[in-house]
Length: 84
Image 1 (cartoon, one colour):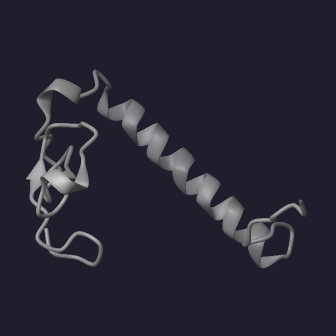
Image 2 (cartoon, rainbow, N blue to C red):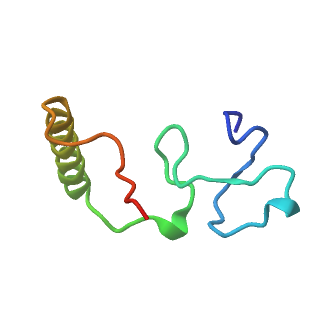
């Protein structure tokens, strides 16, 4: 891995909390490779392709709705910090 924030980080399929001081770079957890193949078989969900497609379509619908709401001024794009 070589991108900002993870320079020289190595991929891992072991999902765990790490102490930064024990690594030159904190490992980057990867569930799938760049071709979409699951590399962490222990975490592979038992889900049909049809169900995943429904999730994906719902995600796109929700994203479109949120973008339209933000564009129309119906939602703020910045978090609100309450006064103490």
